[in-house]
Length: 138
Image 1 (spheres, rainbow, N blue to C red):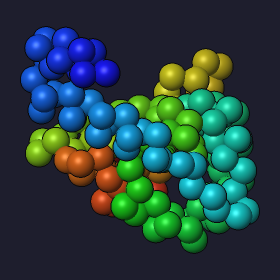
Image 2 (cartoon, helix red, strand yellow; image 1 turned 45 degrees about the vertical axis):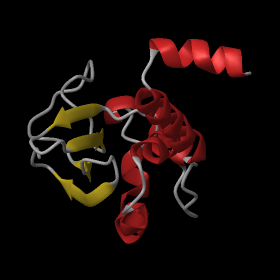
Image 3 (cartoon, helix red, strand yellow; image 1 turned 30 degrees about the horizontal axis):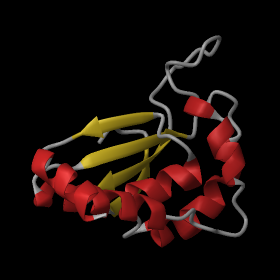
């Protein structure tokens, strides 16, 4: 074991190895957020809101959205699926956007106004710091 570690540590600094181990631990410890009354499989399968199925859970989502404050980005992905859109902002903030109404990228849909979306603001350590439901972009 010492030989393997010595060989790895000669190629990578110890601090890099520790960061990688911490990242893997963080990913493995993130779990899906369980909320009653919302079918998250629908959210995962309704990419860009093209099917309009996410709107069925909108009122329940409004009631429980603050349950996601403090959760990390991996917990969001495991719960809702990959975000429909990701925007990077200053101060290492990230926005995960899930369209509730059909997005402009949906084929065969005529979009007359900005679609409604759930916007998760993630801070520099990838934790949810704010959740808004809006037609405005972040």
